[in-house]
Image (cartoon, rainbow, N blue to C red; front, side):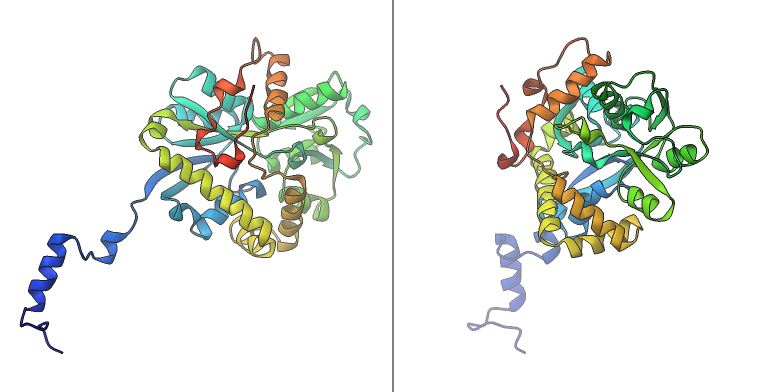
Length: 334
């Protein structure tokens, strides 16, 4: 093959001129720069609700939107949000009440989104031989939740108030496995459970649902998403990119539930039949709906006031920054 173009100009000269003029670039230099995002998500490694984040990684949606996301699995409540306050992470997803308090009290934290649009995603279970057959039987019961300030604690307390059940003891036990062990051992009456743990225990370990918060709480967000303000100010496109990628993931799950089940099975280590059932239920309940619902925020804020977490309601329209969400998910809040 000739090393010269027509006219006798050496190939090396042509390539040198192209490089100088920016007409040709090596493939590695042409790649889009990815912004590194550190994201802590409550119980990510064990909850089906985290599936959109796994899909976004598996299908390349994060990189498509210009971000390289590194996840940590947090324990819930204020513990998860403290990592954001110290600057150890850029995104933090935890109980909505904790997310609201963090954004309200810390000038370096901003509330930018929500997760789990349904109280259906969490229930309380007990061994099948339990004496609890209706919510009225929970009077005097010991009910477990994860950690102080967590979404499980706030939803449980709110549900009991809405159900009119008093004399209930709320016990901080930890994760779902610890709650289930405590329930089986008689330490507590019932403990919290979510998919896929819920279906596994019902199908294989004699669990029975004794409390469904959705029977009493219609509009609800289980978790909130906060960002570090310094990071968001420096990388606003990256914050938008994270939400765009998650929105693509939810749409992928809706259109391809079988493929989404395969992805879930890779990361969550549960039987596909259990995962598929959970995905179908979450889609039916709209658990991954990213559209902002002011009434759901109002429910959580009212519960925070009633429990003494807040002296008075906060203006969610001012506290929540929806500008990073895709436009179709934003809602005008009066």
